[in-house]
Image (tube, rainbow, N blue to C red; front, side, top):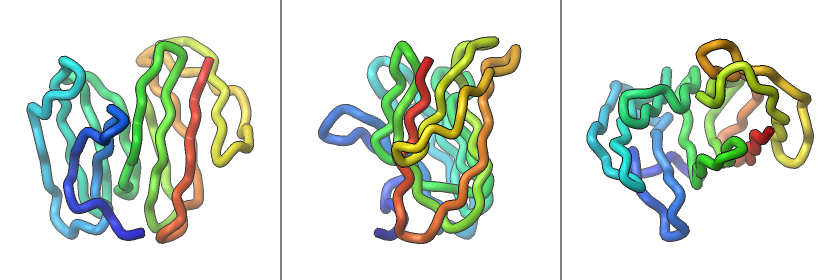
Length: 136
């Protein structure tokens, strides 16, 4: 599968998809209404970043495509695509412990910092989706 054609969209199942790692130049979309919130995405080959109502939600270096993101009371789930080793940071509850599961393999319990950020690295391969589940 190739990179998404739209840099942000609401899927038929109500989840959010965003990003385009194939872009050579930074592209932005702001004020995208999603479930009563205003979303903003910045994306291109080097970085993908998502904010909700001006607050941090997701960032990847280099850029990625994120599909079917669902932010839940206990964490979040999404599918990510990219082309190489990627650092992913998500915004969650501060000073909390979360189980991080990548393609049904638990990589461990991780604790968020005082800002609520949790970071992990993963190897992405062109065309291969990685399913991510982060839960308390």
